[in-house]
Image 1: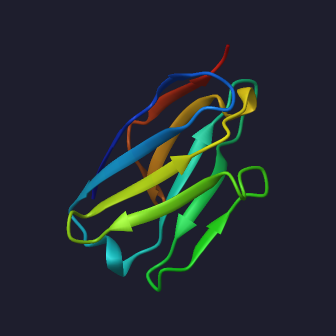
Image 2: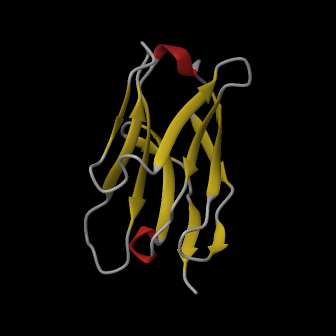
Length: 111
């Protein structure tokens, strides 16, 4: 499986970004796909959100109500819409078909 993320960047607090993940090698509708992040100052990778094969979505408490995960099975892509961004959302975001991750896309939330 190959995962290629895009859409990161610099955004002010309160702003929005939409991350995309192009997936090849598998059909995403058969698997749980997730977004995880590496946050500065933290050793462990933080799980952010997942979308399951039955379309259920789950979120970390820290992003619930602000982030939305979705997928386009025709394009074999996974997305993460991030609204009301906070400085503590800064990090490198990875698309994941557990345990595999892509190379990540950097998100910086700063004024």
